[in-house]
Amino acid sequence: MIEHVPVMVEEVCDAVSHAPSLHKIVDATLGLGGYTKAFLTRWPDVSVLGIDKDPLAIQVAKDNLADFHNRVKFHNGDFRNLANILLEENFMEPDAIVFDLGVSNLQISQGERGFSFDIDGPLDMRMGVGGTLTADEIVNSYSKEELANIFRRYGEEKYAARIAWGICKYRQEKGSIKTTGQLVEVIRKTLPAPVQRKMGKNPARRVFQALRIEVNDELRALEDVMAACKKVVKGGTIIVVVSYHSLEDKIIKKQFKEWATTGLGKMLTKKVLKPSEEEISRNKKARSAKLRCFIFSSEGKDA
Image (cartoon, rainbow, N blue to C red; front, side):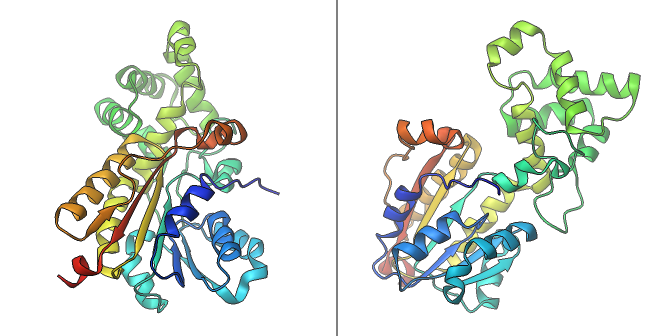
């Protein structure tokens, strides 16, 4: 069984509880159903629509939430299409929409998905069915400049140019890089040992993050779904976002400020919320989590 520990679940529930009425919640990143289970357990009158790109995640979540089958609906789709999904599921004007932008343990634990730098597998990294771009295509066909730009922009990788050079050198001398293990090895051989010791963690970590973002168009999808939220909410709807790196958090912070400035509502988190040290000690995945929350006002929606 895949271990699943939802990050900052108490803080997320507390944020959701600020909604003036609470009957419909959208879990826009369902994963294995950790948040949804907490919502359904805490609030007996709440129904949840769970959305996920990954059909396998939907399947596992259905099993995990079998006890609540009459109060939860499942939709296999991309959250960037939120407005159409809510219309299709007759779930407009929810009381809360929740996002956890992390990669699920299900995806990381399956080597064949290509997300993990610790488990060897093909360079894939597609989160759902239908995507055509793979990490293999990026690693083996992008130019040195394109690779460096992705690693620098999406991975915030200090040694982006050197890693891109190492990948292209390997391609030229030995051919394609086909597995996650190969890619990690190329990065290890490219970076000097003192640099790797200074990094402290797997030297491929930021590169894998950058590749995943590029493969799944994650940042543009996040911008798209924030725009979609504005179309489907009502006065009093709460938006809760848990992000895991600065690029995501920057998009959310900017969007919430823009909404507040134009009178659509207010930020319930003046400062970003972070997990407790106790939670981080229990769940390492939580260490980089940041939570922001926004509430739409009736006046803003009616304006």
